[in-house]
Length: 199
Image 1 (cartoon, rainbow, N blue to C red):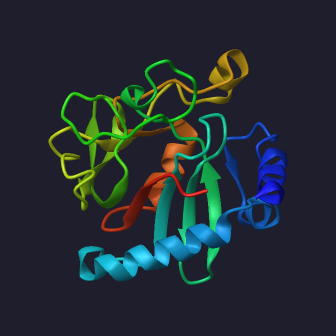
Image 2: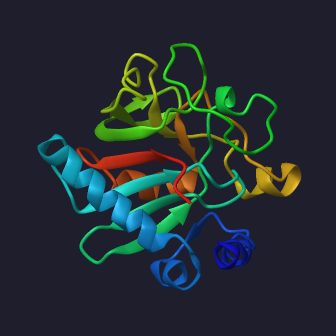
């Protein structure tokens, strides 16, 4: 456990929004565990997830200043890229930068853990976004709560430099404008997105 913590401390030092696959292989301490979790969830969910090539995982065990949303290439077993992602303010009422709790309750403004199926793209108040369908009891209200993938100003290097942590969402998976475009392109519809505490 101490080795993982030390490796993680070195890994979070680089103030970049996203990391390449080569950097992830060399530096990210939990890639293999995430890969095993992704494959286990794909097996559990089966035909509920039409595309098994790429999985997105939000590891909320990590603080918000760390790139903690990972795109997993299932075939190669590699972390393709990692990104900063905001969590819900209902999960972090004191704005510590860390998730304190999950909730599936309407109006909780919290992040929900569990498995999601990515849905259609649409243009909403935050621009281009991706709808999500919660597949577990812990996130079954995702559609009613309008939990989606979108971008916002409060996820950026500038916010990190000035505040040391990201802003908070109302439970949505929120990325920087630039990283959001990569997520839209690589994750797309009918794929698995997992949220929880994994490290």
